[in-house]
Length: 259
Image (cartoon, rainbow, N blue to C red; front, side):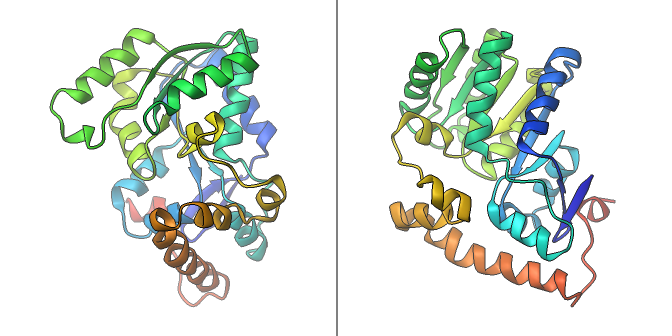
């Protein structure tokens, strides 16, 4: 079942259901696919970005990362089953990978973040096979040789899951461009998760996460970098949700816009 939020279809799956689906896919279907972790920022970007729309349309799963999506779905009388936060998903899939023998690769993050994250995760899960980490330099997509270097590293490592932390929508667009030729069963964009897991950036307290104010905590921690995203982005998201709820206009889905 999917829930339409401002024209974007979100899978109404619980956190445990997502983990189970990913595990079954890795065990039975090795076709390359990717998961998008939806939040208010994505909803806003998707209104005009046709490339991003195509990425969502072709995603294996589109899961509700942000709590505001849960509020919006409830307002539409089509509630989602719960939050599937990208960082929590990352950590849990690494735990499952340690148990099942799946191999993982960490791409992106700030300098040293992926390496520190690998150390933290391997201490928690000694059986975890992190077969590679790499932090490409800023602006790497403009370098003629860097994309080839990244592709070679990942192909040589042959992971089962690729976690990409390049920020949105850059990470999703990179995955869309590369997932087929890399041949990895599951790729997931996870934003700032390496920084959180490694301890380089402190994550919001649990009570703020549960109440849906993790965005406010991040804004207070990194105001210069995030103020536009959260102040203007969240206001526009609220406007779009209210517009849909009170039927001020008929909103097409991403799928219909791509026809």
